[in-house]
Length: 132
Ligand code: FES
Image (tube, rainbow, N blue to C red; front, side, top):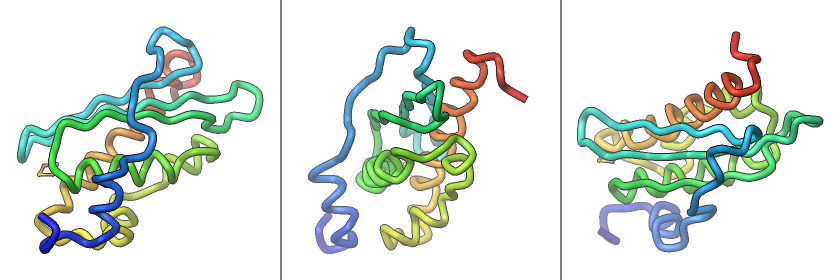
């Protein structure tokens, strides 16, 4: 594992940030649950949004997947904290892959993190009745 992964992946894998669960029934919490058809790995990413500022104030994730998927979700959780939904929505898996130096075969793992944040944002907007 160590030999094939970039140190940043190993760091996130061994010390994942923001692992856990937020209360789904809280109206300020959006939950994204996505799976990768290629490998069956699953990622849950939750955001808590401040109604007044529209900024993400808390993020938690749980990933059942490979080291790259765990590192991607950990990276994403740090990256979106404090951002507005518009800003968070724009984060692409290519950024994660670049930051973590993921090889091409692991691109779909970073795609999971992009799908998960999009799905969490949509869930929040649906709850708030602001989904366009
Ligand atoms: Fe599928 Fe990484 S191997 S998420």
